[in-house]
Structures are given as C-alpha cells and as structure tokens.
Length: 413
Image (tube, rainbow, N blue to C red; front, top):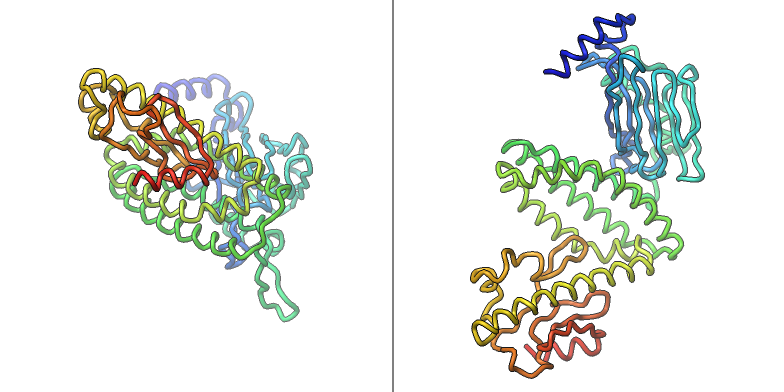
C-alpha cells in the first residue's frame, strides 16, 4: 500500500502526459507456440506488455527456434515514471540476453528499433545469433487475442518448422537428438511451472495432474530418443551447453519451488507426486545419458557422486564409533544414532544422491570396533560410475572397481 501511495504522489508532482497512467505499466510473460497442431514441437515465446489486466497490449514478442529459448528470466523495471517501461532477461537455449524499452529491443547487444517491427524471430546459439524482425502489427487489441493471432501466422508456422508437401499435407518433422532435447527442455520448464502453481489444496491437486502428464511426455521423448543413434561427444557437449542455458533460465523458479515444498498445506499433496516423478525419470536416465551427456561430463558427475558418498560414509563412521564407545558395539540399526541423540538428523548422511534421486547406504549390523579392520560395515547398493564404495571397520571409505566390488558384496549377503 505504501508503494502505491508513493507512486501516486510522484505522478501528481510530475504530471508527465500519460506517464503514470495504467497504459504505461510494464508487464509480460511467456506463451507456448506450436507449429499448427504439432504440439510435440511446441516452443515458448517471451513477450512484453503495456497496460494492466485484460486491457494489456503487446509491446514486443521474441520467439526462438529452440523451445527452451523462450523460457527466460524476465525482469520488468519498476522505474516507469521517470525512465519509462523496460524489460530484460535471458533467452535460455541460445544463451543470450535481451533488453527492451519503449522504443526498441536489443538482443545479444544488437539494437532493433520498434519502428521496423515488434516481432522477433531468433535462430542459432550464443556466438552465432540470427535475428529476423517482422513488421506484423501488434499493440492495438488485447494482448491475449493478438498472441492467438500470431500463433496462426504462416510466417511463424514456417519458422516453427511446420512443413507441407506439394499437396498441402503436413509433413512430419524428423526426430533428432537436438529436437528431442528441445522438447525435453520444454517439459522440464512445465515441471517447474506446475510446482510453482500449487498455492492451495485445489491448485496442488491440479499440479499433480500436470506432473503426471509431463511424466508421460518425457517417457515418450525417451522412447523416441532411444531409437536414434548415439551422437558423438562433440555433439553431446553442444547439447550440454543448451541444457546449461536452459537451467540458468529456470533458476529464477527455485525459490518459489522451495517455498511450495515447505508449505504444509500443499507439500503433503505435491511431495509424493514429485517422488513418483523422480522415480519415473530414473527409469529413463540411461537413455538421456547415452544421448545427451558426454563421456567427460559423465566421468566428472560420477566422480562427484562418489566423493559425496565417501564423505557421508566417513561421517557415519564417526557416529558409529562414538556409539560403540558408549554401548560396546555398533547399533542394530542406523536409526538408533538419531533416536539416542548422536546426531540431530540422520537423513542426508545415511546415503547419497544420484541424478537428483536419494540412495540409501546398506548397513551391516552385528559388529563393533573390535571386529577385524577389514570388516565391511556399510556399502553402496549399486555401482557409481562403474565403481562401488564401502566403509571398512578402520574408518576407511574404499572405492573398488566393479570386478572386485560385486563379488565382495555378494559374499556378504
């Protein structure tokens, strides 16, 4: 309320034409575009508006030929009275920034005057960007109606990839690792949107439905991807860059997503659905890794997972040893470490995380600090990048190749 009063006071002092009228209020968002009925090839455009409510008018729209590109960090300036409306953000997949004001828009530091058009088509990636400026009239009617009209534009359909044969029939777009990665980015963005949309019981239940649909879409993408040849590491590294920029654009959602998960009113509804979603994603992880993650990146990732497991095993040993000194033996179950006050929270150190999914260690009760030093107390239930990790009774967290680890664990069962 104080902000509104201050803004009104400034307007009364300056009386700059319509500078403080609602029609100069900057807004914006993202909208999904598709090539005709080709929803699988959908892409998201970022747009700016002027005005308020349903009376808002389109100020500009940016559509990139990679689906992840349209989902951007989208910042709207609050300094509207003195400096006019302004927007800025990040186009995820190309990895380039944009800035706009009342007169024009800069993409990748190249300025475009709105007098030549307010519709922008962006192709390529960072370092090699192509921008096509279209003089399609916008800003006269409702922004919602104009967005729907733009989606019917033949020029935009061509840009999105809808092709027709000589008879006018639609030609299916051939799947590639690039195109399917773009579709995956769109679905991951939808995942974040679904989580953030959960505000109460009703919206949380609706979000759960959305998560189920998104899970189905990603499963379908994985199945189509599995039919393609494995790309070279050079291609994988390029795709990783695309995913990286998409992740950066989604980072602005993290705070809102965390807030949802910590809201008791909705977390009880959302959390189980997120767990099921994670389990479904784990089923497809090998396919996505094979086609989108380079050998170098896999090695780095697996090394980080093993390091986290080793660190947690060493922490577990300190707790076990302290318990042993008081009780004369290690606990019959790890939960006793928390129940008897040796740690405030066992969760987080009683396992490790792989691809966002928590994995619990396997604990072997019945031993003490007096047992042989080579006794395996805890071990990973599965290999991490072709290697297993176990905790020995001397406090050593040992990494072992599969040919040594598997026979050892089999002998312990």
